[in-house]
Length: 347
Image 1 (tube, rainbow, N blue to C red):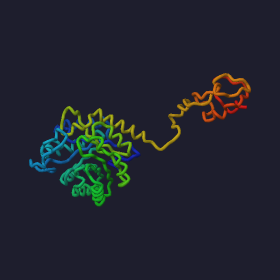
Image 2 (image 1 turned 45 degrees about the vertical axis):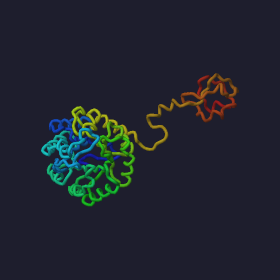
Image 3 (image 1 turned 30 degrees about the vertical axis):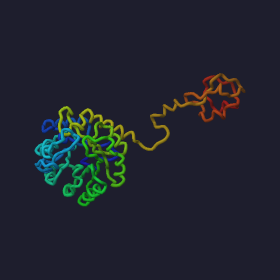
Image 4 (image 1 turned 180 degrees about the vertical axis):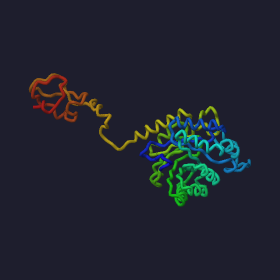
């Protein structure tokens, strides 16, 4: 998959997406600071969300519009008030994208309705994200497809049939690249519900890049996903969880995001290939293997015994597998203690 000049594949180091979400706490300065911290952490992509409370819900307080969540900052809020607090004002987004570009970051966004796509096209966004709840929003997916730009689709809550339907609609109207992110839409997510074994399964079925949109605490699950073939990791980024905010509780702080980037590369490098035998760095370590050595001074014609032969380190003598074959045979000459055993010492 290609977004601008960024190649996303298992042949490259994992692509890390820093999700700004509502962690700016309605401060434009904080939004730019998050860009700075994302760049310093070493991520490649920064993601925004493009909606207003009016484009995503209704301003009513009926029971079904009240949020029930284990996330205390969300619980018992109306959807409208939550999205009002969490949204990124549209008038900021062009400048955030421009500022990100100056910093060498690729900034893209998740639209939540067709007007969001129209707006993002007006500021020339390079790629799109379909958020998990919107995977069934077929008109939105069609609108994104018609832009001809690549898309990353989160699959939280989606059945296999719903994922297939979303891809079918996208590919009907676009030949652009697409990727899938395994996701669990609970905030925070318990690691036991991450089910990252789904990642290679999705890759096999759909033949596309697959990653993880991760809402667990910490970075362990993300690294586990990379070990199972994830080429993309998305995590929320906050300046500090102490600042609070709608997503802060399950977001990474800058030093944690930096650690994620570093350890994701290490995890990816560790996968390597199927290989047996010593790798280059192990060549010197072969001297630590055991071999057969003369353990006592031996006279000519003296028999080799368990007393005057030992299997010890280093590895300059015959291999231990020959130990029993040498016992009872005789020395061709006088041999000093500490001599590595070799066939030419045997009569």
